[in-house]
Length: 399
Image (cartoon, rainbow, N blue to C red; front, side, top):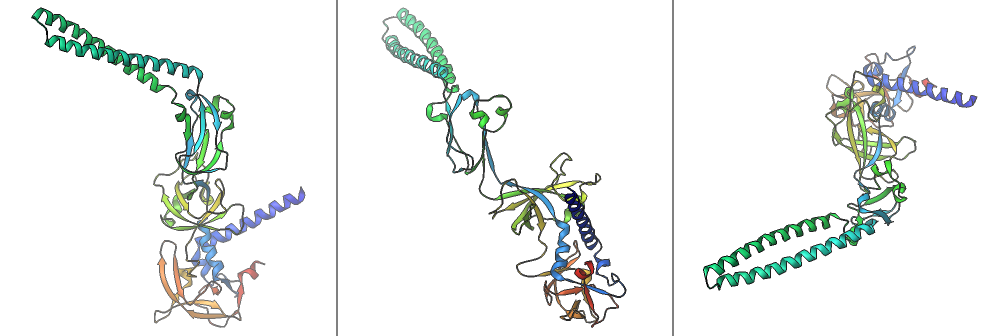
């Protein structure tokens, strides 16, 4: 128990130091870049790739993996008990796959047979009345005098009234019949989408009632893209944009990474009672709002629905090797040529001319398209810097 307490305290101290270091680096880049950050004249350098990781660490968000689409199938007790379930949890199914079958109620079967008999009888009576009507029409045409014709027309009017009644009764009987449980082939419930059977409510299979009735009987999740829902605080809302690529990693750790893209950023802030997903730095600030955003992951092998993950915006082209630095690291000589201070192979300061690319005013960064790699050691600029001075690594300083 004592070892466990010591371990927890140690981890907490390391986390606090790391958070403070990252926050200082991000919020005060100019001060950090300046050579004023020296101790007794010592000059500190850092690997460019490590510096870029620190620059990007401010954009770490939390989220939960969800399916892009899901289908909820509910049990309808009016259609009878569940006779058979054709699928199991984990099954991969296609659209129109049989899921389960209702066991038709015998009383409903009897009622349907009785209504069908009534409907057949009504159709028979309608058919007989139509035949009588045709005969009356012929008799009216062949009537010998007005008195006979008048009598036949009265009989025809009465027959028309009876026909209207029979048709009305037949229509009502047909509606009652249609409202009953469908035929045997319609008692089988089919899936409307393809995916994986995520859950089956066994309580409903066993005939339990109550709250179980309000839950889906079968849940099917899509096997296409995955979504990650998260939140961003209003203070850093402008750092995200739709179509921005992001890096996804599991909260549990590991070397696996997935690439996603931001597909939506909400315009309305989320309520305080919603899931606590987002950027932890601002969670305790009651004077600011969080906005929802969604990430889509197309290739997600190794990720499972329900996993909690980290979301990190990609601010530079990792595959292409483009370097992105805070603007304070890049200086210009009298001829307008851009340069940075680096440490050479002997860990001595050296001026290196570079080719710059696009700048990002919102994040105070600039691309270095040529002249610098992520493995180079960079030094914070200062008017007093000169070539040939000894450079101490930050890693050595921290040790």
